[in-house]
Image (cartoon, rainbow, N blue to C red):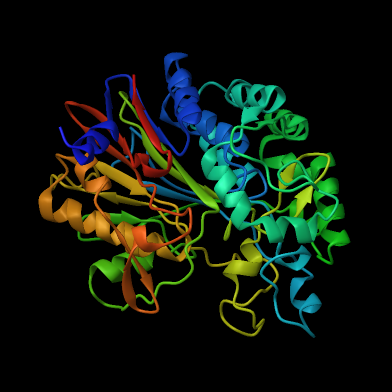
Length: 438
């Protein structure tokens, strides 16, 4: 068997009770354990996703956002979950004499992740206390700093050092952490414990005060009133020719346009401030969750103590810098986001049987379009081979092989296949994504 064939085989897992795919092996194991404990696909996704906030802090966390495509067993078609924090009420006024920065205090978005995680957990049956427990223990005991996180932290070293000159847990004053370092995160364990108690209202309490204080110290304007606003919203996906995508302000509609050849995508920076977790169960539930600190890794570059909390920059990266623009910052307006997820009906039943998403900043649409094009051309029978094919990114309108990039960023698709004869998860293993079946 060739090395390529081995890679493709290792990308796929099958199960009858359930399957899980995640951006980190330990997260996938924790999601599978939730299934074995009597949970469903939603329990598995949240257990794995909360674990990823500890294992992959450059990419996702409780101050980020959540976008998901959900197929409940009792519904004929999927639903979309959008939990993207709106602009702070005082942001447009603060930008009256300056452009919207891409990092620092004014770039910080209102967190949507707690509302999104809580909404998905509400479709499960184990409860937030059980689902958060493995992540809390990981943070308390410490994680072995992964090679991917070490590479991303080196790429973001200037960002973290500029905003935390005295150092923080993710970037000590002595310099970037080496891969293999034991990193304990007691503040994040405390935050996850508060989330288990408060759920969507996490930032209504002490964590919100700490976040607002850190943002204000960096010149930002998020207030307690902004943090009290709800973020999670259920919405109808956009459907076209047997494909469902998450709606605006996600890039789902742009993916449909790309597949239809209606628009030339220019592409742009490849980001790695995002991860994907997906799960399906034998009851007929399936969910793909994209959770993100925005672009690039470590979001705004700010870390809020005492919670070891990386603050996102969804506002700085998502909004148009001109407040008068239709996508400019306005009180209560959600920023556009590159995040999106999709589902595909390969059997003509009217109900999707394939689900997927990838991280990758502006490259999410090109990379998803390539995978969907392969699936629609060759069929879904060899997900591993499709996932592990060479990919290209769009840079200034030109196709550039991903392998030619010096960045640590690569496609990291996670896919689900749900049929009447079994469950399959597939995860691109080239930067550490893992699929498990139980």
